[in-house]
Length: 282
DNA sequence: AGGATAGCCTGCGGGC
DNA sequence: TGCCCGCAGGCTATCC
Image (cartoon, rainbow, N blue to C red; front, side, top):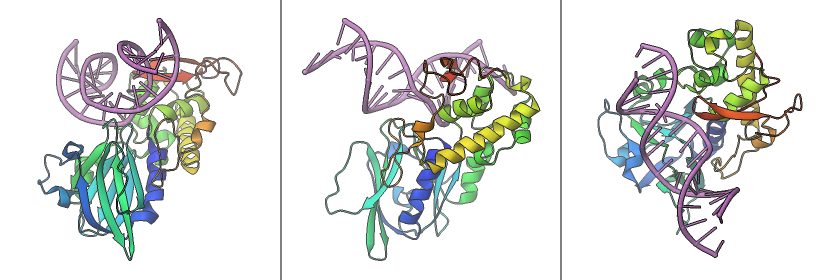
């Protein structure tokens, strides 16, 4: 389940493969994965999917990616639960896997590559914008600050009136962009905060610990290539290693790495949540 | 109006 | 072996 570290690692592995490449053609197998936001003008799938552009940059906010071409067009990419973007050599008869909903032919110098968007569960998708400004005004400006930039006071300001459990606030992309179920549990464990504690009852000093824990765990996960729980692969098709370093996520019933007590799990904010009752008493 | 809930969707693993 | 069911969860729409 791609969260910020997986999307950021994907971005980094994508950059050397696609920046500077010319988008020669596109094949959209499922048109319903491509959205044109209502306030934007409709255009052909080729225009929406960057055909004839030269890829200039790939940006990220939270779990969202944006591929930008030299004439200003932008393609928003969201991986949802099971989305993948992969780049490989352009073969004569490429082996088409199930759920490869879109594929691009890229050319850079004499090198031709094939980029694919695959998403079995289709919680993800592609979204076309005429400009980066449009993407910001229609989507990114509604997100909270990117989780890699969060500070204790920022988090406190955005949560201190909320009656919700802190975990629910962390998962809300309008509060903070990029944290999902895995890294919410990991950061709460590191900062010894009970995931069910009401956001407004958490002290400023605990928010400081929490913000530091969020940045630390996300940074470590990016460096490990993300967490491959089921299906996550980077642009080159490689798995992420961070699962080995999960301290609570996926460890229900196992011993707490800090105190040795059994970790418990329950539904919090409608998500399976794992924590240590003994350690996380803040 | 904030917060809880339902529904979207497929793959996989456990139980029988 | 094979079927069925439950679970996984990011995000939006809808309800309370």
